[in-house]
Length: 243
Image (cartoon, rainbow, N blue to C red; front, top):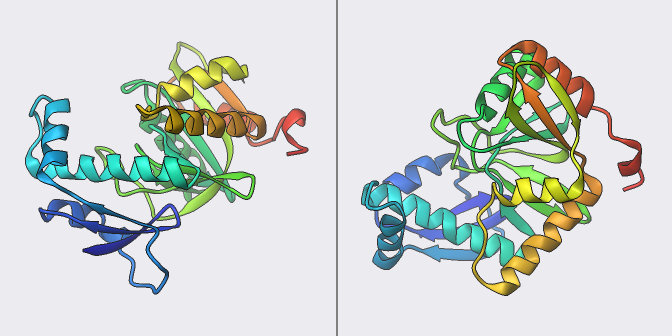
């Protein structure tokens, strides 16, 4: 059993293969805080992931997916958190999230921010970070599941804005109404199967959309896209300032 600190939670994890501890090395925890919850991987958990993927992946990789799925369930059910498929970064102390269907260009847009703003930008996670609500605020956390390019850091930042990306021939950005924003976010998370967890998730989304502005942006692959996005979302709209 090894200990890890993920999303400010101490998690004991027992695995069968060596690949999972390898990718989680940056999250290893040697402190004395009590364990928040444990994950013990079984053959049935690995086989379930193989069925989901149609046996495309190896056993050791499926184990990492089983660990991720277990953590998602525990964080959602007990710790006001959820996973979001997105690319996320922190700039000047503020966390920004870019989400969209796979292949749209989330990672590319984050790269444009790094190219345009340099060392002011630090990547949180390029694929599967966690969000948690803490004392009425939402924070985004790095996780070991960082995408194909393995880009991310074991850090957290307050969520300041969310941007839903669409490919376009020109750069334009505007606020996204809450109902449409909810649909976009639900399409980019792991939806639970039980009613209680789904109610928890909807409550979290409701809280998030009340205090964090969401935008939709059609963008090109250009540094101008990063500039326009930043200049729009760096300022909190009036309706969110009292939160």
